[in-house]
Amino acid sequence: MKVKNIEELNSTVRDDGLIMTDIFKHKDLGVQIGMAVFPPHAQVIPATHEEHEYSYIIEGSIKVTAENGQFRVSKGMMCNIAAGELHGVVNDNDNECRLIWVFIDDK
Image 1 (tube, rainbow, N blue to C red):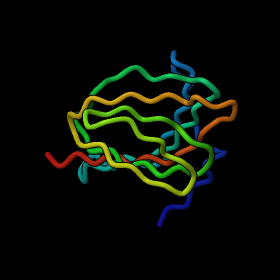
Image 2 (image 1 turned 180 degrees about the vertical axis):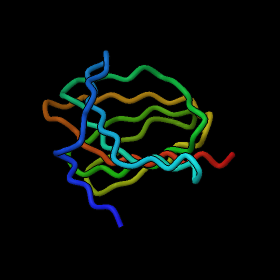
Image 3 (image 1 turned 45 degrees about the vertical axis):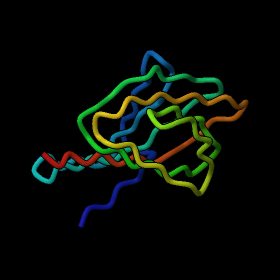
Image 4 (image 1 turned 60 degrees about the horizontal axis):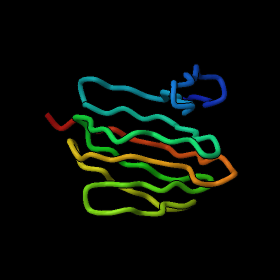
């Protein structure tokens, strides 16, 4: 068993202002887990990736635009974005949003 304290892990601030923390990665299983912090008014331009993405909001809310519409995802809610689906995110609030994300590569 491995135990990690998120506050002791290295975080990266991306060009769009998101703070990303990798928590766990297992290449053989195709699983990666991390935390993202969206500062107030941060915006992630629409993009795709090869992994299925599952996110659980632990604080705040974000607006997610995907191929099938626009959704408000708030504390206590989860969302799933299929591999290859174009999606973008905006934190249109004055408070940060924190979420735990899981990427699963089923190839």
